[in-house]
Length: 355
Image (tube, rainbow, N blue to C red; front, side, top):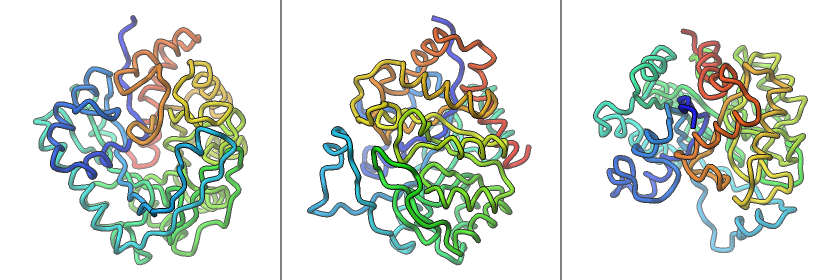
């Protein structure tokens, strides 16, 4: 097997695992407990150089909630959007998750670092240190006055998605629906338009992966930064609401932005099923389409590790070398492999944050 290229990843939900089991966080992070997709030993084994670590507020579970997993295994499906979560309810959870991320750095004894600049990321890559960017997947923890945006920025927040797949005071997320399009509701609110402006001012990257089409268009019109979808795929291949239309991909290319390929099977498979029983063809079909629309300099990986069902050929983070071998066998050369693995992420962050 060819030597793996270090991978910088656009999205993971590892912090959610720590939030749900804080008493065992040392075992989960430092040793691995045999669950999930990520831990420090497996990151090292898989060539995981770093990525965006999401602060995500789970929706309260209703007793009569539908069986989402069963629905997503039997398309077509249309899952109802969860209710909005108030920022005063979300802030304690978000602060706890930010605390877990900063603790991961302390506990790693030099093997992991929370990064706030591209220079930090490049230093970590050169020294073999795993890097982490604090990201928010849904801005529930930020009130309309945006004071908390400045608080989290001071803690290290450098990337933010205004919504997950539910409404916030800033905009509207797309529902999990197959088949469907991202044209599912209204655009940004007035608070959302102010959020875009303040993120631009603070050089916080805006993530469009869960935003509906009208909200996407509002960000494209208002933002002076590259358009980025950290973990999304091609709607032309898999017609899920969570995937990007060719028109959206055109806008991302024109902004010199970026898309990270999502490993979630329901966004990869043409039939929209969540089953992990699939080969490499759907993954490569999405990559080919994204590269064809965006160009080689604007595509990377956005795994959704610890937040999704992923193909059995990857399995967990130790499957990244197998994915790279499949990409090589498909005809991707080494310069393209390096771009897809980490160079494009560093370049778009430099265009967003500055050097």
